[in-house]
Length: 251
Length: 215
Image (cartoon, rainbow over all chains, first blue to last red; front, side):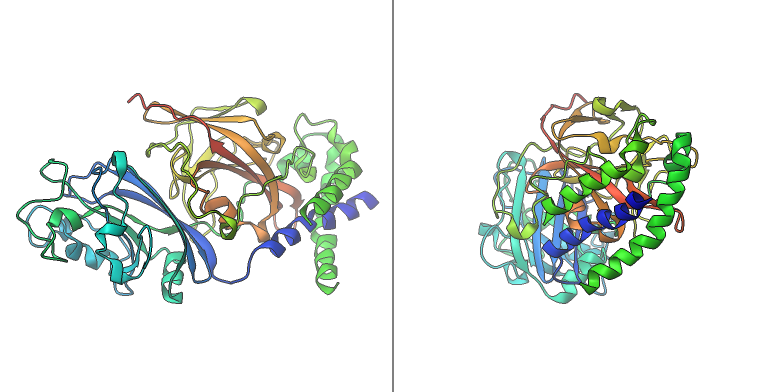
């Protein structure tokens, strides 16, 4: 029995070492977006975005495949307290021109809060800094950037699954570049192809805590020799383990 | 600190080792059981990550259709889909002989950490992921996908964490620009008071192949 009473506290030693290495802020976590084509915008692209939040700092990776190659793709994290925290549906095409522009998507995903530029400023001021976004060589965006600082409200929104990643830039006429008569709703010097949303995904916060992936039948039911021990261990865990925690925190 | 804790854990295993000879699989109550290959290089904390690491092989989205882990005799031809519970926790499969894919995260092969979870035991005995803690660094995990491709991952760490100190960011967060896989089940001691195991066993693996989709 002595061995049993020793085991529980020893198992608990692992978390303490992990806890010591990491968590400085309460607001830490991660969120992942499945990036899917925005309806009506003729996209065949898809990908993922992952954001790790450490206090007010973001580490962001974005991977998109099958998007227009060799042209800049503005990419942002959107959030608005009044937005739906969603990606737009086909119903967002309120001017009925057959495409959803960035403004039409606004009620779904809200304004830009982070510009996912490759260098320099990441604030909304860089929303259309087309010389600082990935140009998708080979039709693939592989984007990684750390240490992006945001407001507490934006960090909280990401961890609440309320922020949305949008990657822009389409080629409706399949000529390999941004052009066409329709001008961008954001900047009349740009064609709408350059700024219309291409893929979109809500950043869904990672599940919290561990997984309830066992009910104990294996710990007591597999061998007669284990039946007694399983029960004893369970008791030890319920009792001694808690005591061990208290001791640790006092020392 | 980590290595010190590990050494002591090994001693703990020896204490109860006598109980392990009967079941064919590691006894989850002692699942610290030796197979735990705690990361010589634990998943990088984002703080320490280089800002621009090269991207590894990455596949496009396609739903996984099974799971094969020859080293521990797992060969599943279906996976259920898992989301989040109303409390925000990871859903778990409703039956004990299937594993499930967390489909709000990456698909296996996509950039980021794809997550597949399964039970370690049922009310009456071992379940689908009973032997997960026996995996070692270097073991292969294959995930067939609906597009006809198979994503092959190599295990680089097996670790055990108390559920109340579960490292969410290491498991679900950024992956240093790699397509990775996490296999999750229960481990540690079973708490009869709560009806749950105290720990989770997590297997960390990286995509090694870049197969072309055939469909």
